[in-house]
Image 1 (cartoon, one colour):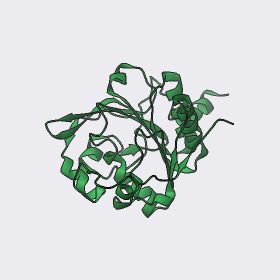
Image 2 (cartoon, helix red, strand yellow):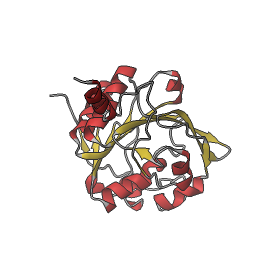
Image 3 (tube, one colour):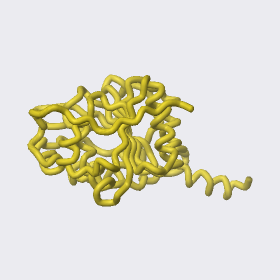
Image 4 (cartoon, one colour):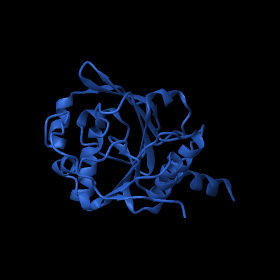
Length: 235
């Protein structure tokens, strides 16, 4: 293989970073929040890549960040998305109230963290799902690299929720953001940004009201409605 051919091949691989070449900004889809888009290279969630959201604790708005994207993909573009190993049963009425087309939503209830990683990798690589969200109880740099490669192959958006304590761990994914609740706002700070530096911002919770169709946080006053769950096992 000639040097020119090798350079052309490497230029198509977003999972490989060359030290002597500038890192191009990855293509992205708008998050639906103008302040967040303005803070990220590509102005949104990277496509054909994995983003890690490193969360201080559950319930601070980490899913609200994705609601506009999920609504656009499922309702406006009739594309499928998947939620893998969510820590709580998804509240179907709230998702529907946010404009998400539930018939386009696959929920995977894996029996173990490893099964969740396995399922996420295959869903990303399949190319069928425009976005795959994983709540990772346990992962490694090697497993994250596999997810990143799968997202490159499938062209979709991968989102992995991890504990903020894992921000110190090495990860080969394209984007890592730390999410904290600070002074009544959601702080979003870059830990790693491929294709630029990014900058920290604070999102007013009122920004979440319109995407959710209700004031944030949503208080559940009725019984939860369990959306269809599909167990996925290695075969």
